[in-house]
Amino acid sequence: MKRGLKLELVVTAPAWNEITDAPPRRHIRRAALAALDTAAAPPNVSLSVMLAGRQRLRALNREFRNTDLSTDILAFPAAAARDLKDDRDSAVFIGDLALSHEELRKTAGQFNASPCEQLAHLIVHGVLHLLGHDHDIPARARRMRRLESEALARLSLPDPWTADARRSLQHQSEIRTQALQ
Image (cartoon, rainbow, N blue to C red; front, side, top):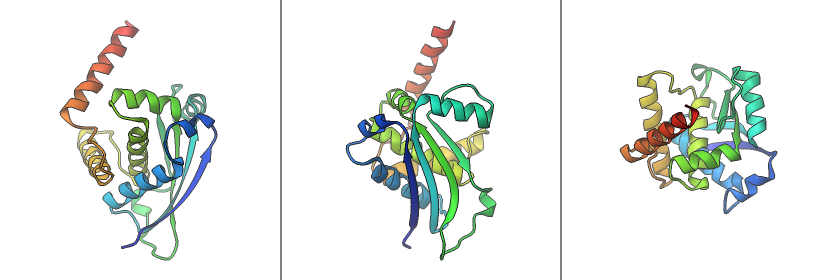
């Protein structure tokens, strides 16, 4: 099956041009397609991606999630996953993603990943959220991590959820906790 993806990309922070060795659109498109294929999404979808900075993500997080913190990615699903129709004739709009280049660089370091690898991981993660997947409870988190791992494998990227990667994240978390004490 040939998959269609209509991607609207808005870059509001010029630093995004330093993240990838090719136009970000190509990396984003490849990662989104891998997530869509892995999650068995409708054949034709549309989504928008805003590449911004830390302050913009913090403002969006505050406005829409009542959380006054920056984050690496925010996902704004357009509809409940059960409402996504398999419409072969027109693209189904699944929602919006917003990413912060500063937070992407920070999480890339935590995952021992390059910025390009982390961009792919975040796009996969965000697209899965747009499709209704979540990590709010352990069973759903395990399913979402499995789908992320499968999508990243389609891109020949390392699995961020291996035991070594989880230990690295735990270590980073412990360092942050100690710094706050």
